[in-house]
Image (cartoon, rainbow, N blue to C red; front, side):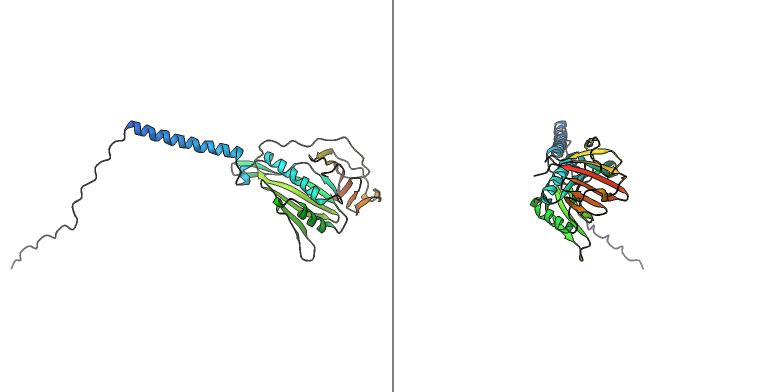
Length: 271
């Protein structure tokens, strides 16, 4: 027996009319949009250029060694002032520590300026404390001393991403450096001038250089092998006198590192 065909199911979807095609944009509107886009791009580019010249950088990589040099120099001046008149300072030049890479495509360099501070043996930790207390508040300087007193260090921020660090190199000798970290050069920093040989009681064989700070401190130094030991230096008016470190009130100073001697004569002061 045959059965009647079942009715076809109703369509569950409502009929849908496709949206009308968008009206073609007039050439005038298109030109206006292009002009606005170009103007916005020029505004962003111009703002970036102005900021790079006048704005505050937000990362060290946006700065240069050339623009960091005066910051490092000012930091060393401030350290000398904070150290006070009881030490004998000897300042270095602004020298390259290493080549480096700012980005995979941009080379750079790390520069620093150093001051050696000769102080009576046993007063190194107190000297770092005095520097930390004497630096301007904006440095946020702090001295650290390890339990037992084996390690003494100083940290401070000179601004413009220049780090100030201090450490005890040996009894009677504290070194404080202002370091730029890795940056592009900007332009090649000028090297310090050479000098004629000065008083040289240790017979140190090497080139002589003059290093100076704007405040008036001036150091003449030579580094190399010496023909005579530190023990031949006069014992009167000494600030420190050990087998490796010597300084007197006349601004004469010397220290020995692996049979290499640095002999310096410093005059003037940072007031």
